Every structure is written in C-alpha cells, then in structure tokens.
Amino acid sequence: MARIKRGFTKHRRHKKVLRAARGYFLGRSKLFKAAHEAVMHAMAYAYRDRRNRKRDMRRLWIVRINAAARLNGITYGQLIHHLKLAHIEIDRKMLADLAVRDPGAFAQIVSAARAA
Image 1 (cartoon, rainbow, N blue to C red):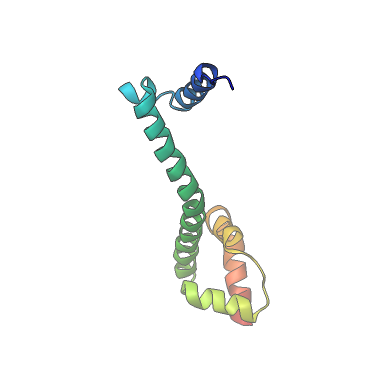
Image 2 (cartoon, rainbow, N blue to C red):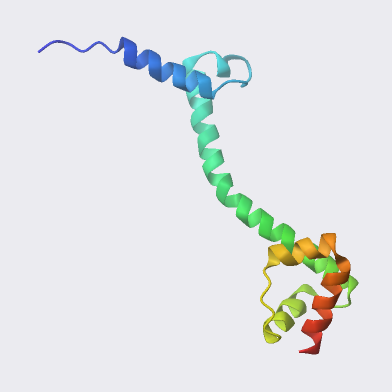
C-alpha cells in the first residue's frame, strides 16, 4: 500500500484557518499555530454569545419597559401581572419598542391593563 502524503490536504486546511483569522493582530493572522488557536477561541465565543445575546436582549427590553412603566406610575412586575389579567398578549420585545418609539400607545396599554 502506498504512503499518503498530506501536502495538498494540509495546505488547504491551513489556508482555511488563515482565511478565518484575517484581521487578527500580528502572528495570529500569519502563523498557523497561533491563528488556529485564535480561530478556535473565536468560534467558541461566537457559539456562546449567540445564546447570550438572547438573554441580553430580554434584559434590555425589561429595563426599557420598567423605565416607561414607572413614568406611567406602575412597576414592571405589576404591569406584566395586569397585562396577564387583562388577556393582553404582547411580548416584551414589542412592549419595549412601543415604550421607546410611541410612549402614547404604551400609556394606553398601561391604562387598559390597569382597568382589568
């Protein structure tokens, strides 16, 4: 059986890693070993942070809703409770968007929730 030389495969793999490491600082974009480590870490962080972004966005929405709710004389927790009682099904993303872009509409939702 003939021996397999890895020249082509290895070169292609190195090129793939170095292409992914473009723009990295100094040797991290030029040297395979450093670039490979940097790319692996970058991929791990990207995977983790795609999940963390969802948490961060929800936290941001809650902060915005709470701020707008307090301007209308109610706390975030009370507002969510009253919305559930009033059977107003609007998610936090939409509520936060209304709170920022259309405070009048947000105030109407708060008053409707309070009435229930």
